Length: 299
Image (cartoon, rainbow, N blue to C red; front, side, top):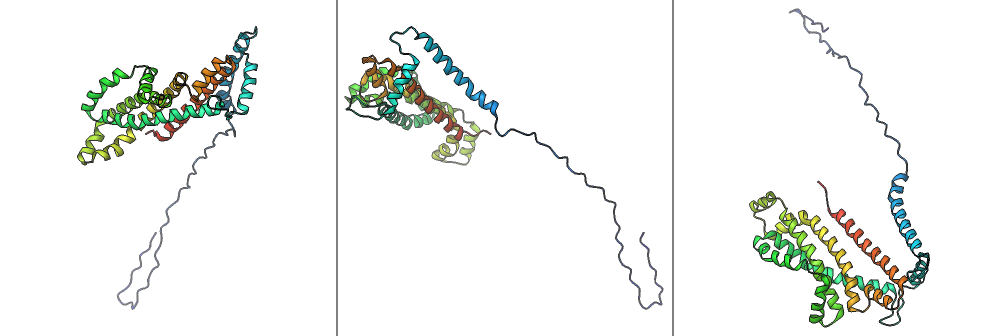
């Protein structure tokens, strides 16, 4: 309690009283319950086994069936004979004994160079063309019938046109890669542009953004996953087609190398080339999928 002090009128000085602080009862603070995290192993062996074991078993089954099929001999080589040939082949993959006798490493690099040239030209033409088709209705109505007409044509059907125009096998092969790579990029880019929400474009119209800013700031970030999907499909098709194109045109390349080994009746080298072609295609696919995951952001 606070007591009041009364003073009489005759007092010369009024005594002062010290302020009294009223203390309130404090409640004990409740401590937050400690959350114990479950202990995790330093390394998830089960996840590793589920990732590694199925592919290993698949390869084992394939090699086992291959070995059973070649037990009685014949023209088809056994897995052991093919492995021995691969060891000798990759012991010196970059030898060169003239234009028609080079190691498998040079043949792979030459094929990748043609694929890179044709694919790069297709990207320079196809991606901007896809933006134009998806952005402008008039261009879409004008170009879409041509794409629908030319897209189903086999890529090798364009090879004679390339030989006629360029008069050389190497540009003709690059032309074939270009024509087979361009369609997935054009179509996927156009579809991506058409699926951009109209609200984004309405805001750009209100802000009076230029067409270049609309493309770089609105369309490109939204369309990038579609573009990367088209690029991934295109590079797979390009690597598939180059082998057949090189078989027909000759020169240094993995396709020509396979055909040359067939003329020499070296079936073991043909089987090795099949595995090499598949491995290179798998690496290209993995690289582009990693690129797509890096540039694709989820909301």
